[in-house]
Amino acid sequence: MAAHSSLDTAITFASGAAYGVTTVAVGQPFDTIKTIQQSAPAGKRESILTIGRHLYATSGLRGLWRGSMPLVLGGTFMRSAQFGCNDLARDALRDTALPRFRIGGLVDTHVLVAGMFGGVGRALVEGPTEYVKIRQQILGPWRATEALRGLGITIGRNTALFAVFVCWLDLAKPLGLHPFSTARCART
Image (cartoon, rainbow, N blue to C red; front, side):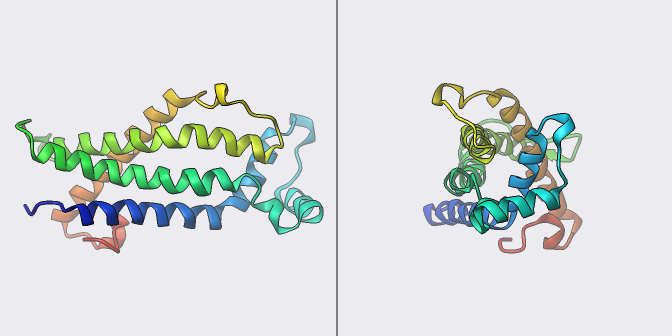
């Protein structure tokens, strides 16, 4: 296995950052409408079209991207941390004497552990970022002392999901699956 260079790590972090910016640019209007709808009292919930029209009428297109700045900054770092921490952990594991084996003959322990590190890296950025984003979307006050609320569940979710994702990527290679099915079109 070839050594992983600093340039490869930088490219991985940059790719994650580009992904983060793209997801905010495309997805934020939908997320803003969803958050407003979810935060409304039970008897006062409006349709997504009504919320979208109201936001546009009162704030223009800018209203649909309300709360996006924390995600542009945090989302960029969150995806960057996710893929970058995964790569750094894989390199560190490769260079250690820790045993490498396949659980059930399928799941590579180094891939699994590195994926878990990637999930934790993302969660440490995502937790506070999501808190600020939601408070801005619903026009509510926020306090730095509350920004870590829910971080434990975010770490658990991201650790599990990203570990499963990278394990799927690892399993898909020997199965000869097309790169698109592994969400890895740009990098082999």
